Length: 575
Image (cartoon, rainbow, N blue to C red; front, top):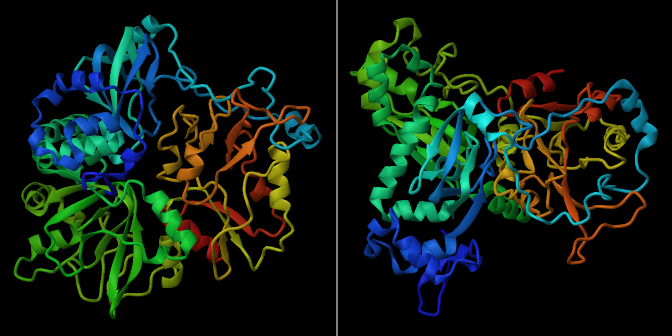
């Protein structure tokens, strides 16, 4: 945790140089300290540089919501948790609320006439805000209210969150999207919002709060996450409960990795960025690790260094093959075959080997167990084997080692719709750029520029990431994952131009643009500053034919592909 030195010589967190709010008074802090769970915390267990009162003052803020106002929306990314102080909140459990009800819009596909009309109907000026006559300021905070609450309560299963309860902590700490929509009930609901760093410090110095958060996690999310592991299907309910009780969740890396990575990349030193090691090749396999959020890379020793063999995303597991081998042949145990290193910020579930050996392996059919580990072979048919990862004596990975390093060092595995260009085929005709501009009011949404390896270039176009850090901290939810097809999109009506998404994006794929009226006039807010909006590739979500850039390339040099796995890339390289 970065820190700065105060006049008294204490190392205070540097984030406090910009407190969460300037509105929290000493009386507010004193009132919070009289409420549970803060009143039950021992101030002496906190260091002087991060005192309990200072954490509340600098990392928290008080917020008031009106009846029916949405506090968090399902699918949004957030960096803070909430505690109800007065009033109550209602969480929608099932079925999910329609996107239109929570302020999202289903993309309207353009018909044939509109698709043709856009060729001559685009505005002459850049970034024309067609709603400018109705919306002149653009900086005010957006509030979204649910309508017909009695109807919602009748048609949807909900639960009440009473005063003193926390919510939103799982998404805040693990950078997962909000799992439910929660709205305020009653004339006024007062909440204490605390950003993730403050919540982390409270859990670090107060064991009771940590236990409380752990219990919430187990109750609300753990069973769902573990159900994604293939071997759980063979377990009895009693065995599942035993596995759940023994599972721990841990986080590695820097939550703000995107900003640090951008600095390193701009300095040309991203390749030497420090990566935390979760487990090392040659160590005894004492647990199975499941990646819950973020990414990790699998490496293998080569001489005095290491090479990247694969990367693991959400739902992938590590260490199971070795534990299964040692259970079957305890007289010939093997160590971990690879090293697991986190990339950026990674959230994992850890299941002890003893639990796997007691409950999981005896319940699995023999034909579903991974093969024994040999010096010169690997069972690639096992559902638990690591795809494309090879044993030391096996064939080389599906892509070259230097290309694998290029993908991992630039964090390109994050992209699910990455724009990849074959520079040997590309003639620099710019038809892709012109097609994008024609589709988006004469304003292209990407740059035909980006990191290059050999003949492969990854353009600066939104990759619609599996872990979209651009969403973290958006104050209005304007940038969100489309509820219908999953693309990362921006709603210009609720974008307030705060630049948070553009700052967070590690790939320089979001631009802030000045908005103009149809007559070309630059729109300004009440403070006389130009109104800015975030713009980026929307994957031509409103076009029936898909991304215009791909359709326009006359030489088949450009494609959009999922780099979470290597399958698409390998097939593309072999054309």
